[in-house]
Structures are given as structure tokens and as C-alpha cells.
Image (cartoon, rainbow, N blue to C red; front, side, top):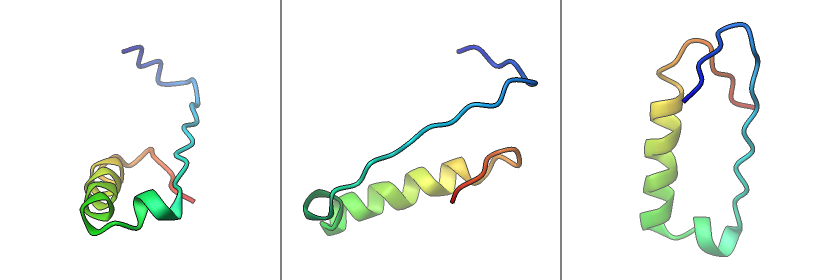
Amino acid sequence: MNRDIGQPRMMSVGLHLRIAGHPGRAAGLERFLDRVLRHEEVWVC
């Protein structure tokens, strides 16, 4: 993994309601967001 500090990156995560709306998958999304938000330099909007 290339970690160039000065280079901004963007990642899009597409969610479909029929898939992401299931309780087990919603829990996975929550774990993903918890992990991502541990990093100070990451924005979620």
C-alpha cells in the first residue's frame, strides 16, 4: 500500500438499500466506519 502523505485520496462506497439494509450487513458497515473514523486525516461525508 502506497502511503504518500501529501497525496489526497478519495474512496466511494456505494450502498444499495436492499443489500445494506439487512441487519448483518448494517453491522459490517458500522464496523467499517468505526475503523475508518479512527484516522484523524480521514473525512466522511
